[in-house]
Amino acid sequence: MNEIESVQTWLDGLALAAEADLGKQNAVRDEALQQSRELIRLCSNAIRAGHRNDWQSAEDLLAQADGIGRQMQALLASFPELYYAGYTQDALKELVEARVTLALISGHALPDYGASGIPLNTYLNGVCEAASELRRRCLDMLRQEDFAEAERLLKAMDAAYEVLMSIGYPDAITRGLRHRVDQLRGVLERTRGDLTSSVQMARLRHALSAVES
Image (cartoon, rainbow, N blue to C red):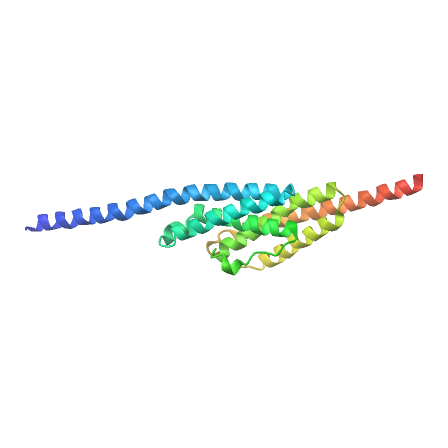
């Protein structure tokens, strides 16, 4: 075999190996993309069910989401470049958001982050989005004049903000956490203002009612 033939044989072998390897990765990626979309859909629906106080539906949807999340993590265990891809971590972030949001608005125990297998930078971003999601629940409570519950949720938002703002690592490490924390600060301040205004208005209405009677 001359030199050219040797090179060609080597290249042909490389091409075959690459085709097999990349073809498998592409198939896994396609499956992971489908799972990530389904995971995000289930998490969104679970949160909406929780806001409606439809706890059975919320728990069923979250259980389905947990199953999809575990399947996706198992699928990608041997493909770290796909596991740490944006679409994968975004879907896992949504799972954290759903778990934490439903736990906080229901008053149930918070999930065990250590047992989730989800990278902590992704987990922190999910917690941040869960804290922002509590604003919706707070506003629902304000409309019902359940100020004690709104105050409880605001305290949870505030506690999350205090912890998350103390994470001072670069965005390359935290997956953009600082930007989300900055957004949470704005959500927190608006919610605090809404609660203060609602309480003051309720007190004023009660005082006027007492005078009229």
